[in-house]
Image: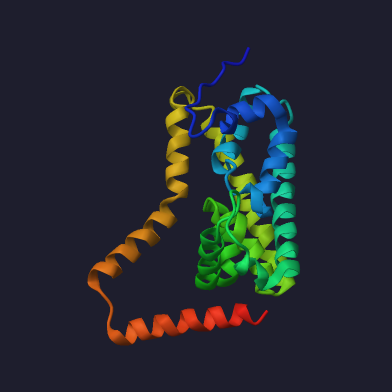
Length: 237
């Protein structure tokens, strides 16, 4: 008989990975992965911790009785499909997304973060964003808005979907069989969430340090010009 795992809620009880999996099973995992990978409403859903817990419970035989290869395959397909939908949505909506007013489930700052991430890393952002909460939801949409070459997007989408969907799940499967990890799963999940937000923390630290150092008049003028050009570009569409 499998031993129940006890996880520490990182948010509302209904967002706890084990609660979601025990309630909705593998189908629920696939829906969440799909939504978080490219639907605007999916940014708040658990990602890395959900996949890690899915791998752990697959190894445990608790709630998920399917073989690991099938679980990984279906999760990867859901992740890739989610990004494809996000890209298509971005192409359809276009720059109007940058003028959409804030609402309870939509914040302009999330789109701008994804836009900056996309501009900084280019095609690689489709892979890297998989491991960054919130950004992974909006990056494929921004790629669609920017009309990124579709073939290039598909290639990087598949790579990212495999690395994230299969990689994190397999990690949970094998680490979940280690007694120490199993006994301290709540702290492991917190660590996973912490590691996943490191890229955001680094960017915030760099911005803070830059603000403390100050900028030259030339740097400020260049930044203001870039902002003005961006606003004019999206204002014309």
